[in-house]
Image (cartoon, rainbow, N blue to C red; front, side):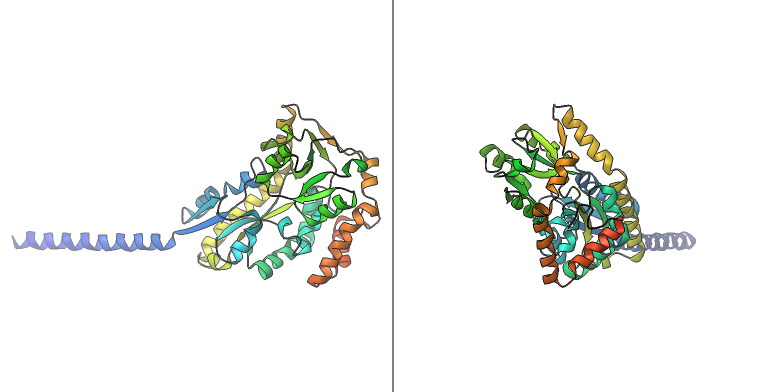
Length: 350
């Protein structure tokens, strides 16, 4: 009987030890669980939305479920994506350089007409120095760490009436999303209008605007071509970048090993963003063509007319003025861009 009691007591002790061990393990697991909120903007059809929507799954797989990312397109207004990270209102966001170009001109180099004309040139400048520069700017001005880079589908001009010559721009009210393109539209005799994406369709219906510059993919998915039937490529700021940002305090809460896992997932996302870029654009174009949309590309002769100093010069002048105000040498910076691309000022830019 005594032996049975001893065995029973031993069994109870073993079970208690196992329970404590399990509780300790669960406590460790709970301590390793991290919830992050990520703000994005609504951009149906674009690689931006396709890739940012995949962040939760990518991060969960990379970290074995230790990090949960919740993505929302209603947390923060589009123009506040970067400041929301800086202020800690969200842990992460997928911010657009373009929305910050008026404050920090280096964020808008790809909107200068004739400077960066396709995704390959964008990537070339990014790899040469620009992405490293902007990483420092994100950190210094927006207290944000860059986890990944990407770019919007090629920009198109959707318009109610054809805009096939430089004269056709005159008097047209066109939605633009950056100060560089706005300067060009002004110089062409048009009227640039700043407007969030959600207001574009009713603005087209009511005649508030005559057309808009927007990503091929977003313009197609939101069916702006139903009213603005003419879809044209003037190669005015055709590439626009975006970046996935994280607040340093939120990032510091992740153990170093988990940070490496998350960064690995974001590196893979960035590789896919650039590797599949042409596919995103081609798919969007094909979908519109199947619905009867005809794409028009400005012929070289007409594009050369657009690239005259009288039209694009004001964009560069305003950019350089702002660079001086911010405290860096604008012309020297543009020369670095041209050098990275093997271009000279005579090749399409002032």
